[in-house]
Structures are given as structure tokens and as C-alpha cells.
Length: 114
Image (cartoon, rainbow, N blue to C red):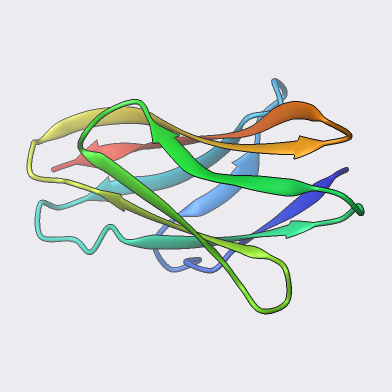
């Protein structure tokens, strides 16, 4: 594994890895007044791994931001705008390079707003 992920928001979301290799951050059932800001630490596990500072989301209601930490890990902050009721599935994509090859970490954000 080139990196490891650590859920820093365990009280808000569960973070699991699917059979397809995608990470899933599941809010479960939340209300329109719930705090949806979450943090995930991404730690490089190999030398030469370089993160791209541009983080992509599938929708404007999901705002990701990547910050480099002093220990070389990355702090991924994600905010989901939960103003609309119903189920949701959004995608956040973090890209990085290793040995001049671009790769990505895909995190699916999902849940239901009541």
C-alpha cells in the first residue's frame, strides 16, 4: 500500500474500503442542522509519493481541501452541504504521483439527510 488513511472524525462518519478499492465515508442518517465537516489523514507509506494540491469533488455541494502537515502527511478536510433532504452519494478524488505515474484516491461520501 502506498498510503494509509485515518478517520479523524469517527463520531461523524465511518470510513471503510470497498472491494473496488474506493474508500467510503458514510454519514448514515443526518439532519439539515448536523455538522458535516470531516477530517481524514492521508499518510504516505513509500518514498517519492507526491500529492497534487488540487482535490476534486463530483458536486459543488461537497467542498474538499488538502493541507500538508509537518510530518509529511496530508489532512483532507471535507464539507458536505446538507441543506437538501434525501439520500446522497458524492465523490472526492485526491491525486498523487509516484515514480512519475499519476494515481488517485477515491472517497465516496454518502448518507441520508432527514
